[in-house]
Image (cartoon, rainbow, N blue to C red; front, side, top):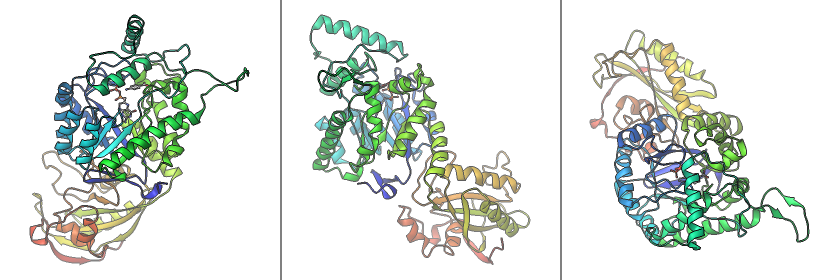
Length: 517
Ligand SMILES: Nc1nc2c(c(=O)[nH]1)N=C(COP(=O)(O)OP(=O)(O)O)CN2
Ligand SMILES: Nc1ccc(C(=O)O)cc1
């Protein structure tokens, strides 16, 4: 059983703490995805959207260049690579934890070579070439189940998907099937696309599954299919694929499992699967919940249009998180992050240790440091547990006058991006202004930089964790010595290699004594 509070997911050189659920933002660089096709189809708008997802709270960005919606048209791997590779490259440069949603070995290989952290394969690493690529690298892997979960023929179906392309594709395929009398189309590309094509072609026909009869002769009906055979099939497949990957050399802690909502499943089957989330969690791997905007979410919420299913998605995602799912793959990152942060704060109390670097070079500098500590201590679900001495440091980064610096150590139950918002309010309350043209380095009454939160990494333009300046700032590292026995060693555990003193900036010149706050 996965120890929930201590679980991590190893993704290349990143170790993602799963002490709380993580949000994977969907970035579809496609013209035809089922809910957002064409919205981010060129590199520039895709990268901008990826960065916006990070700022909205995404821990991971999942970049995909091929829609696998019901009735999808397979994309040539070269075309797929042309869509995703430039986007993956730029997001990696921005420090993001990047996942690539592909079933094509050539695309996977290119992206892993660039440094992509996760391979998300909707065909569940059934292609040995995908297993080989995963085994040769260090990336995390998402093993997804795609396929039907019932042996019986589906009953008359109701098509809830509002996307006319899915319906057209379904109708065409149904006609073709009658004409062919054959389930296995020839010359439809590589083996995995033929299999996935087939599943998603059938999937396009509807969202309802057969009514299950009780013991023979009985006329009583359950409204939902029985869970055990469905979960045996899904968990059997996922467990087998995980073992295949491990035999090839992929470590257990790199593997995440996903039951593949909507891939060959009918709405009531998807509900049965979501209800069995805790059972999947007990397999001992992180479980992904990837229900965002899907047809079954429409079926249970009554929302016909896929793009309007974000609120319903939040409900389904929180249910999964409560049952132990730790990766929530969603389109609406801001909405899910806000809901999750609020929900988690109430339902799952847990503190993190955080460090805030303080600086002032205007007026009563040490007085501003003290007032900042007092105000930070008033942030909800947060307290200041210790404060370093104040130190005089050399001005760095183009600042003209010497700065008084300190570091405050906090205990907080807030998510880092929420804490950041409160710290910015503290700066405002103390009269901090950011005049245009000074690039954030002008004179300041107070600067409150969130530099480190235990177990948290974040990329984006609004918040980067650990703070990129932490490695070189003497005016942060020296005050930290008052709080942590050996900051360099402590930070090394989190993969941060601090620079030796002679290579740092903003060298500490004098100890100004304790701060009375
Ligand atoms: N691991 C995993 N990956 C996925 C899953 C999923 O359930 N699990 N669903 C997808 C469909 O969502 P998307 O918005 O990407 O739609 P598209 O296939 O039309 O691009 C695409 N990728
Ligand atoms: N790729 C997919 C896109 C959408 C759905 C769904 O709505 O069920 C399933 C798979």
